[in-house]
Image 1 (cartoon, rainbow, N blue to C red):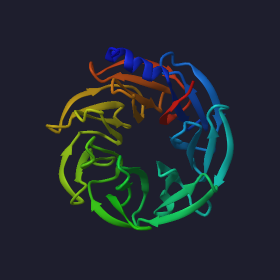
Image 2 (image 1 turned 90 degrees about the vertical axis):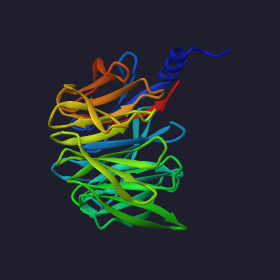
Image 3 (image 1 turned 120 degrees about the horizontal axis):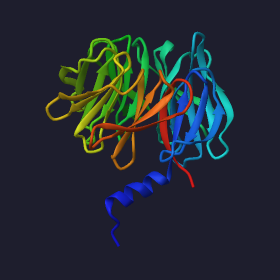
Length: 316
């Protein structure tokens, strides 16, 4: 029997919990996305910014970026128990930020050291380092096929495109606009969209040629994240200083709508199934639920002080 789409989406959502990092509280919380209720909470290191969940849903990995004092650790969280198991000491690396899981290993940026590191949870060791040579290597992500890795280098005004060559990785540095921070691949993996935090622009990089295809003005004051919808129709940009969520039509590269979503929007997470987006409002301690059909906020719920990084986890 074929279930109606709304039942499929509902069953998918009910099987998921939302993992949210609160930077100012230095906590990780588990949230029921339907009710907005917090069902688990655990301390992390100071200033947690990004979170990734293991493929089996058992563990969360958190980058402890720090606050005034630079952070130098990763937190490993048991999600079923909502408990920090241990903290990975990364010193002398500082300001770990972006995270991505690929091949069972956790890749992380060390912003202050201009590099990408690789942590093996099985051995509890950092087993690889790649120097970018670019200032402010902030975010890292992989294409769906795992054959391309990209980093956003805020201070270098560049995006690094990495491809594996046996045990090594080859880097192509692609100059873009001022302060690239948020990034996302198009669903087909052929393009990378990078939002600039300091000039309001968005660069579109062709992955095959490793060149900028186009740059357009999104009119933001300080772009923080950019996420494309599952169907590739829309791109959402959180404007941290403008308190807006900017909706862009991908085909035309035109702004469709600016939504006054709340104070200091940062992290954006798409719901499995593509019906909604969850936007972290760091300035008011809430998550805004954004309907991708009506392009309206449908509800909000509190999670703690300074929410930012988010992820999904399947739990019973």
